[in-house]
Image 1 (cartoon, one colour):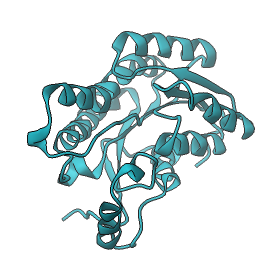
Image 2 (image 1 turned 180 degrees about the vertical axis):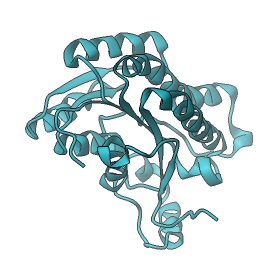
Image 3 (image 1 turned 135 degrees about the horizontal axis):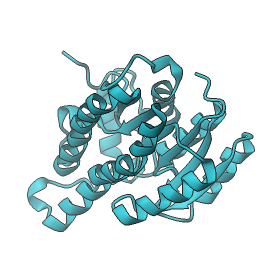
Image 4 (image 1 turned 90 degrees about the vertical axis):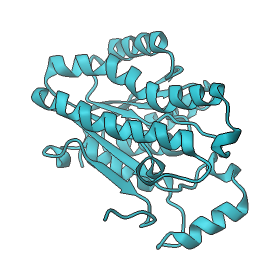
Length: 248
């Protein structure tokens, strides 16, 4: 999965799965724009990318703000010249019963998890169309495939990402642009560690491999979709869940 000379943009890349994706792409040869709403973790991730011998650009940006996204993409293109790989990873959630949620929470979940991907695809894909090449990888969730207790709004937004991926793949195929989706199952990240120990233990018992995913395991699936190995693959949804969910 050689990505030597490729230019990548990863959202939510300051920590967790996004950081692992940025480092995985860099290890395989890509220069990486590290996009992150929190300005604190972006520079350390960028420094790690550079330590691997690749070029990095930390880029603080709110993925839900279309104007800010457009400006950030312009900045990245001015530095990199073009983009070969776009990974829409940024996401956010808070576990709670749907009937206890309020519209402002719905708006935030949808803006970050769904509109963020729309914003970056809208800004990046036209440049990929000009070059007649590109790889887009959207990070959804198994919650969007099968549902998840206490994550109903989040599951709806991630289900939208899955449908968006398939539809955009149909539109972009004529330009030799690939659009695919990775659906992580429960993953050992800082965000997940905020859950109660009982939830973690229950999931570990339910997962056939009896453990949570590691962020780098999700990143390897992204690297496959970003690499030439997936050149005849588009519109596909890959679950990386240790067997927690399986297609019928």
